[in-house]
Amino acid sequence: MAFCFQGKRALVTGAGKGIGRDIAKALHKGKANVVAVSRSQADLDSLKAECPGLEAVAQDLSEWKKTKEAIGKLGHFDLLVNNAGVSRCGPFLDFMEEDLDYVFDTNFKSVFNVSQVVSHAMVDKGTGGSIVHISSTAAKAGLADHAAYCPTKAAVDSLMQVMAVELGPKKIRVNCVNPTVVMTKMGREAWSDPVKAGPLLSRIPLGKFVEIEDVTNAVLFLLSDQAAMVNGTTLVVDGGLLCN
Image (cartoon, rainbow, N blue to C red):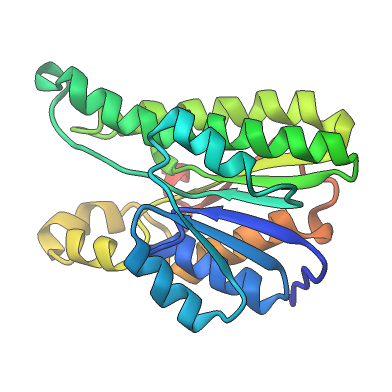
């Protein structure tokens, strides 16, 4: 399915690397006017070199007030992808407050903050829009040593449902994409050990982890007019993992 976003303005967070970078490139290829946000200016510079005309903003989204100001200056968007995310792992009994705050500030509060700013502009313009949060299967199943990450993704799913209910009447659709392990550079490094990967792979009926393009294609569909009646859903991309 080919997706065309000509005439649409799109904001992608966490666009410097991995999934976010691929989404930004795909939207640019689909003729959207893309604004990419990342903490790393170097990553944004290389992305701009690949995508002439793409606009880039360097901002640490864990900084609430600075983020609100920076996003507010960018004007109206038709499309928003909240992709930025972090993780710190450790046993629940030993987890520290500063680590909990670090994960929640980026994984949940930044999604809330950016979405609120962008939604206000969408409502003011009155032409509607589509918002997609990158969540995780970790929102739906507990993982050892993920006492902060799992709750943040569950919170994102819940926020999405509230937004879908409140913003739907204003012609704004809100959905989540929930992948399992994705084979980004970081994912390949973390799951290259067969001893570690084997037990999880054995629970995936399709027998493999998720590729970046699998997530990107799901996001493009939800952003597009082909998903005009899809609102308030979590689109799981996991090869059947959660069926087991």
